[in-house]
Amino acid sequence: MSNQHNVAHSEHETGHTKTKLYATGFIVSALLTLAAYFLVDKQLLSTCALYIAVGALAFIQAVTQVFCFVRSNTSKEDGRWNVLAFLFTIGVIIILVGGSLWIMYNLNYNMGR
Image (cartoon, rainbow, N blue to C red; front, side, top):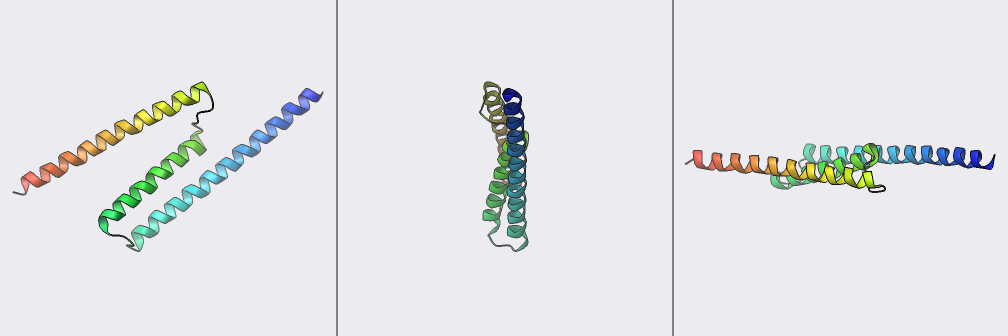
């Protein structure tokens, strides 16, 4: 009987922890979205600084959503592999986007001559 009580109590704590994590993730994501919106709407920074700030806020929001909603963490062996796969994917995306921007910049520079 005691074992059943402990299992039920453990499941309740896990449910409460998940709800708390989801609520925290939602609030942080909403605040980051509002921060990006107000930075752009009020033109609080120069154009270059604005691009960097919005990009940084987007990256922070993506990490927040992965850890709060996708539940990709390093707690288990599988979790570590999930995080490693996620980081590899981010690296590939950075290389593709950065390379594309570099190519477009060079094309724009060379075509403008």
